[in-house]
Structures are given as structure tokens and as C-alpha cells.
Image 1 (cartoon, rainbow, N blue to C red):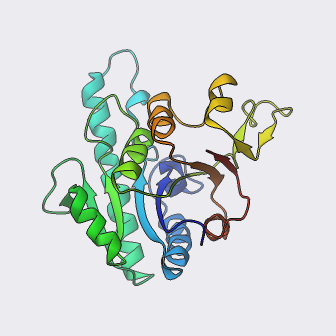
Image 2 (cartoon, one colour; image 1 turned 180 degrees about the vertical axis):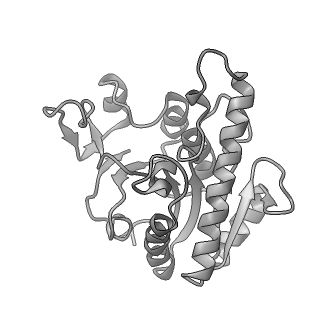
Length: 235
């Protein structure tokens, strides 16, 4: 395997399936199956889940809610997705899983403790990090970069539901947009490519943490772990 320990960032929209809003459990089970395949290969897996299928802070416009409050609501949405993924991983795939939250919710999940998270990974448990970074004004992309560095992951895998890599433009709007198979951090900066939000990207750049951006499709995760070319790698 090319990577022993990974941090997987799962977009909340993937959990919605074909719905515009909410949780589609069949879609979550499809994701769980792919994650289980990695686990069976012996990969240590940390996961950060988004909450966009339920609520996004930036959905609030015209000061309907205070920005900080809206961001906290988005963090709570990620906890709902994390609990759903945990349950399906354990019930359907029989894989021990722990949810750790940056927001204290001791009745339903462990608080985030770095050393405990690493110990879970060493014992073969999947750890799902919910609640973002625990701070408003930061995205779940930033939380993924932070957790990846904290657990000393070999790579950050960003799974999306719409695009299969990094393009020169928006491939959903620009048919001439070019896909990149490989990029350096410098190239991504110079070309102003949207790999992740700027804070998340800076964390990876400063600490030389490789990023792989790819689309959720059966088999893609295993291919990446085995070193096959899938999506776009930034290193």
C-alpha cells in the first residue's frame, strides 16, 4: 500500500444522495462499503465529515442569523452525519468505529483527544471526527487538514460528489476546463486553482501534506491506496 494512515474528508452532499437535502442511508452505506474495503487492507482511517446536506453557515444571508451561530449549527449538522456513518459501519460492515467531536456531546460521542484518536487508529478502529474544528469561521476542509496533521496521516483524501479532480476552471460550467492529474503546491497557488479553501490549503502547504482530490465512485479509494492514478494529487 502507498499510504498506511489516511484522513478521508467526505463531502456532506454525498450523504444526501440524489436528494437536495437530508440523509440518504443507501448513499451512506455505499460510502461505508468503500471505507470498509480500505479497513480490510489494513489502512488506518480517520474521517472528517461535512454537513452541507443538512446545513451550511453560508446558506444564511442578509444577517438572518449571527455568523457565529450559523457556523455552530453547521458543526452540529456534521455530528448527525458522523453518527449515521458510524452506525452503518458497525451494523452493516462490522467495523468498530468511534466518533470524536470538537464540540462536547458526551452522551453520544467522545470528546476529541488526539492521543486517544491515535490509539483507536492503532487498534484498527475507524475514527470519525465531527464538529469541524470546534471554532466558527473555519470550514470542514480546514478541520480535515488540521486532524490529518494531528494524527500524522500520510495523505489527505478529499472525496467529492461532483468533480473527479482539480480543473483549470469549473468543469460544470466550462467545457474547456482542463483536468490536472498532478500538481505541485506552487502550481496550484500560481494558477489560483480551487483545491480546498485557503486556510486548509495553507496548512497542507506549510507541512507538505499531500492532497488527493477525487470523485466518489466504487473502487476509487482502494485504487488510491494502492498508488494508482485517480483524481488529482497535489504534493
